[in-house]
Length: 371
Ligand SMILES: Cc1cc2nc3c(=O)[nH]c(=O)nc-3n(C[C@H](O)[C@H](O)[C@H](O)COP(=O)(O)OP(=O)(O)OC[C@H]3O[C@@H](n4cnc5c(N)ncnc54)[C@H](O)[C@@H]3O)c2cc1C
Image (tube, rainbow, N blue to C red; front, side, top):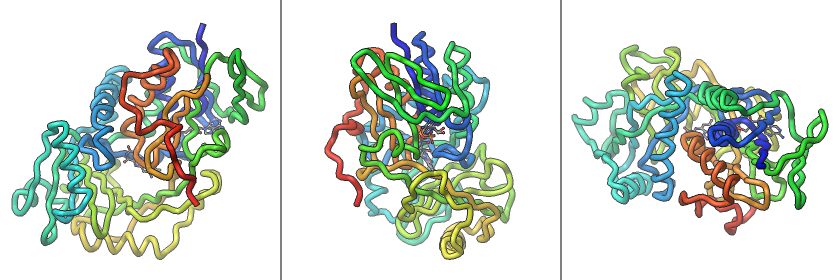
């Protein structure tokens, strides 16, 4: 009889616990905090969902399945988790990321549109184009609510029979021929299988993987015009080129979130994340807002830093090794895929394999450790 320990009940772990429990597989989640906390990779109010994917066409079928599962979780929880207000990628017409978005759309016949001029201004007044720029509109995109989503998945798992050990850090997962042992301050527990989904704390439980934790800073700006950046209508935006950032609608009504895309700073552990953000960084993002987002006042009213785990090639690690499923290092873009990753974890536990295309995430692919 299978029994599973899911270590880390964050974005991916909560979904894994939900999908395992839905299949009737007994599972216990362990988290150092509690589902929905904001100290790891799933904090900060909003996450982008999109299907025309500049990170590679291999993700497109997974994104479509993720979307169905987000809708299922919404039905189960009675909560709006994914607001499908669309998304746009903005930048120079020949920019490689614009071409990659169009390539993945073509490969899977996704209904994207290329907008320019007055059409772009009328449709998305929040994101005016500069000379030579285009806007690729993805009607299947939108924004997710990360903290409520993790709470909803954990609650759905518990309703389906899972148990969650909250505020219970796992210090070790040991595997032998007969099963796995999960070690916490409260003692040791035995399971037939383990899922290790520790997010930016990966180096503790997966010290031999080429994973580093990096800090990503989010900044929120007040609107000049309250009719703009409405969360039910305004698409998420990714601006490529110079400056480069992602921009969200005003989810809480107080500010519009902008995540500047700069080389993110490597950190030892999320526990050491500094609350203070260098003034030079704040000036850099304020300049980007002043230059490209006239609907916002360019001084942030909120600044916060979160962490995620990264591999050298920017794709996560998802696969089974012995009795353990590794689900880690989703490299700054894993939230939207979390439900399908959770379902794949359940496949890997149940049968040791999955029919879904995850070769690009294989933990044993050749990866150079970052210098
Ligand atoms: C600022 C920011 C913006 C992002 N924007 C997007 C976006 O727009 N779209 C998108 O798709 N993705 C985005 N991402 C990436 C996405 O949020 C992450 O890839 C995803 O949340 C990773 O999920 P996870 O389960 O691996 O980690 P987490 O969600 O951090 O979960 C890990 C969990 O493991 C627990 N844990 C760790 N170690 C232990 C232990 N030893 N014992 C017990 N519990 C443990 C932690 O407490 C935590 O709850 C963003 C990430 C950041 C940081």
